[in-house]
Length: 70
Picture 1 (cartoon, rainbow, N blue to C red):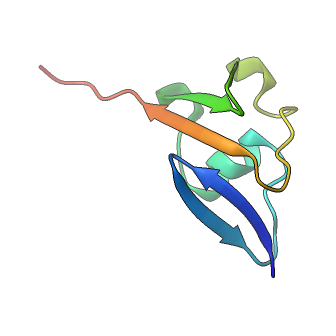
Picture 2 (picture 1 turned 180 degrees about the vertical axis):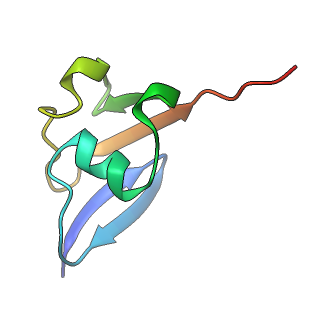
């Protein structure tokens, strides 16, 4: 079975070590907080709330990464 999240339109299943917050998800995906904007279920989550923004079964998460260059 497992815990399912939809990340950038793709369902991802977690069997154990379920990420319970945006911060935990970003750590697991090795994404630096400073380079990403997170939206959970249609709500943009301020960086200051990454550690408290709870993820639930079926949550839809959009992660947009900033890329430098010219």
